[in-house]
Structure formats: structure tokens, C-alpha cells
Image: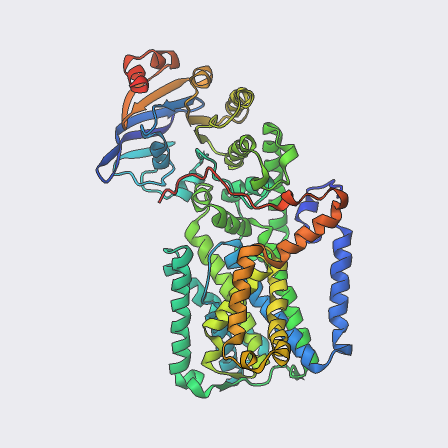
Length: 358
Length: 251
């Protein structure tokens, strides 16, 4: 078991708590930087997709994992970001400005969505956001002059000034940079008053309010940040898929995003990244599985969403804290090796909650 | 000097008149207790003061400011902190974070500054931490600093809730049954702690309490209510011996 000697309050708000963390994250970054040297283009593209999912995952994690607001409509923000970015690019707006504008635009839409969404919680919020994503999908389909409707929309090749970002390696590095930036923003928020207000709203609205936290404002900020980051992911995703069609951003995509944060582990940024790895590589795993399955099963339509749904249910039942929760258990098993008690992580029922006041 | 004044407060839920024409005032630096049998409307009164419920009739003044139509979070900014009867802590957070959330009303940074975590945010965090540590020292919570609330025993949770309210640096603290669920030893400590609040931090205390021993030891004045109506306001001894109070309790 490792104990960290603390001599200064600064140590509690540092991004890296001890030397070990710095070492391991640096190692990870080192590997990620050199991956393009020995990985094929296909897998490099898949990794870039994982990074994009990671950005969206961190965005959704801020909303669902930290503020406790479920959203079944995050694919809509992915779509808004993607279309906005592609539209601006095709009007000759430079890559970075276009991506920033797409991010800000989806953050604004998220903030506006928050106004009606503030009035509903839990399952009703899920339904309201679901309705929102259906509306966005319809708009993308019917606003032909901007989105091209069912014909779709070609995404112009990205370039940073004279440098083309088209190649797999450079696109990989671009996505990695944005993912690190996103995680940095999220970490900063979570160690400052806004992030704490968000977790307070998640754990007890009534008590958050009597601590002087403005519920409406906090939720609106959470919605806005979350949809902004998802919009950023959407902008990058546009380049990954190359050709936008309204049905790329449907309910199934929303469920994948939610699956990502739930399977990864609600309430941790690690979870968002683990979830992204999981969701990014699951289709590959299913494709490999298909080959070894009997033909009738392998070619059943809807096999993929079926497996997604099954995994979501199993995780909710057996490991509500997701991959990250499982990792914590494994880690504490080794940390406390001969003395590990299973009961440490036993889920308990909480009694004595103040009766709901509204 | 009067710090809190409630005038003719009334509220009803459907046909139930939970509170009828309640009027009282709390003076600065006193400990004012509210007693009454179950269902008398004590917690409802607290919820009115912290503006979780809307006043149907009557008005509320805090430090001379009309607080009748403020919202819950604005009341907190004015300087009223509260605890809940069965604790309403942020379960998934550590004790430290719970107390830091108490500092939220003193936040001076903007969202953008927090996103880049600039020097101002950093200094503010340090300042908050020092405030919190002072309260941890006052209530002897050092051992629990990094523990998650969901792992703590009930008595400690009650204490953390008081600590969280204190970290708001309020002028008035509303304690809803601070001794319920505590063992005799913890209740003894509570008496000293409440006295410390008043003596060291200069905080006025308004509390709901059933333990008459505790009430008579630390209260300056006591108000007894039953069925949403005031029975008597006065010195603890006087209230305890009042015929109607005895009738309300014994039926």
C-alpha cells in the first residue's frame, strides 16, 4: 500500500498527485506518440476514432456522470457539430476557426436545450432529449439547401494553412491533441467551483440549492459544456467518415454514447476513455465474431445494436461502476494484497434520505 | 438586534394548514430553539425560511432585507445556512469536497478562468481550503478529510453537515434536529460545539430539537409550536412548564 506524504495543500489540487502518475501517463503519451510508426493505417484510423469518441465521452460524462442529467440525444450534438463544421469548411472557413465555431454553435444549442430541460429530471429528461435528437435528425434531413438532405454532404479535406491534415498520421495526432485538451479542460473544471457545483447537483439538488448553488445556471453550464465538447467530437468525426448523412446521427449513436459512459464507469474521466476504447473496438470484435458464428446468427440484421443493448443491461446489473469501477477493485486487491476484503466495495442500500420536498 | 424576523407566516398543503400566522424574531448571537410534537410544522417552517417552500401569506426579513421572494440559492448568499433532518450530504464526494462546496457562494472566478485554472482560481482554491481546514479543526474532523460520505457513520455525517453549513461562513445557521440519531456522548459534544459556534464564530443559531435537556442547556429562548400554531415563546424553563406545551406533548 502506498501512502503519499502531504506537506502542502497544493498537492491536493495538482493534476498529477505523485511521481508514479506522471511516469505512467508520460509512458502512455510516449507510446501514443510513436504508435503511427508501427501501426497500419487501418488501425491508426480506428485509434483516431477512439480519440473522437473519447472527446464526446468526456463531454457526456460531464453531463451524465458528474451532473447526473441523462441524455439520450447526444448524437444530435455530434450531428450539429459535424454538419456545422462541414458547412463552414465548404465555405472556405479555415479548419481551426470552423472547428471552434462548430463547437461554440453546438454549445449554444445545448444551452438553449437546457432551458426546457431544466424542468424535467430522470427518465423524463431522457425522453425530452430523445425528442430533441429526433427533431435535429429531421432538420438535417429536410433542410436540403444546407445539409443536402438524403443525398448527404461531402466533407472537404482538412488543412491547417498550407499543411494538409488528410493523412492518417496527421489526423491521428490532431485527434489526440484535441482529446488531451478536452481532458485538461474537464480536469480543471472538476477541481474548481463549477465542477463541484455540478457534482453537488448530481448528489442532492435540494441541498445544493441551499448551499447557494444556482440550479438552473449549473445545469445550463453542464449542458452547454457537454454539447460543446460533443460538437467538437462531431467536427472531427465528420473528417473520419468523410461523407455526412442524416442517419449517421440517429438514436443508435446516442445509445452508443450513453453506453460508452455507463460501461466505462459513471463519474470518472478514466471511465469515459475506457468506454471510448470499448465502443471504438467493439464493432471490430463483432465483425471478427461474425466469421466464427453460424450463418443464420451472423447475418441476422440488428446483431450489433442487440449486442450493445445486452452489454448495457449486463453492466448495469453486475458492475454499475463500469470498467473503471472494476479496475478500482482489482487495484485495491493488489494494494492490500493479503488483507483485501470483498465487503469493502459491497454496494449498500442507503437509508434515511430526507423525504423529497417537491 | 433582530437578525431574522418572520411575520404572520402561513402555508397550507391542500386542506392541511401546516402553519398558521406564525410570527417570531431571532436576535443576533442568540440560540433560539423550536420545539413541538411530530407534525407540528417545525421543518415546514425551516423550509419556508430557506425558501424551499413559498410563503402563502406573511413575510420574511433577514437583517432588515425583505427575503420573502428570494430563491433558495439567494437566501444562502445572504448568509443563512442550514442542515437537514436526515442529512442531505453529497454522498459520492469526500468530506473535503463537501466542505469546499460550502464555499461556493464566495466564488469570485469566472467559468473561463476555471477552465484554464489560472492563478486566481488556484489562489481561490487555496483560500477555500484554508477556510475548510479551520472548520475541520473546530469540529475535529481531521481523520475523515479524504473519506467518502457514503462510508461514514451517521454521527459523523451529522457533524459533517454542520461543518458544511459553517464553511459558508453564515450569519445564521438553521439546525434541523442536530441531535437526532446521536448517542449520548455525541450529544454532549454537540452542546459544546453549538456553544463554540456562537462564541468563536459569532453565528446565530436557530434550531429544531426534541432533546429537552439539550434545549434547556443552550437555548436563550424557545418557541413551542403545535398543529401549525405558536403556543408560547419564552425562556426554556418557562416553556417547559407551560400547561399547553405539556398538553400538546402528552395529548
